Picture 1: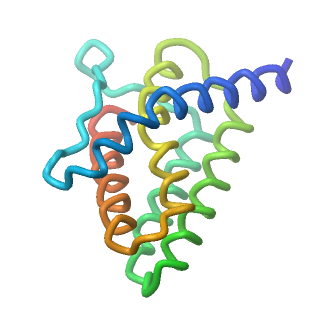
Picture 2 (picture 1 turned 90 degrees about the horizontal axis):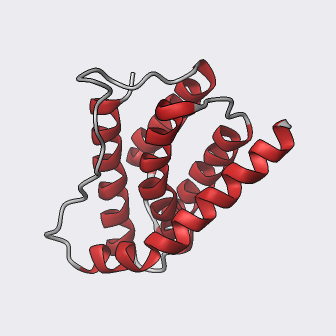
Length: 146
């Protein structure tokens, strides 16, 4: 059952990535646009994450804060690879269910494509913008998740 869940979540994330890819690319071309996520609170309260998710999010957050070490395009691409590995770990260990889980997927639907874009970006200025977008996404995440 756990392998089925991992497979299902992986397929769901890929579908969200494909569906958001065009939108994501158009958002990146307009630097003045700000990323807005359609989150909702849980009856006025933050959504609860399980311990595995909290740990993975902390790891992703730490990786994003390591941007001070970025000096070249290859560093951005490497950061994208590390973020992707952590996302895979998050998905593989996911045991959440219900509305909290659904809201997490709203976040992942935005965050996953930015990670994929950062991994393969060939322009340093675009990489910087992608990283800024990721930071905005995490700011929004922390407003809605415990």
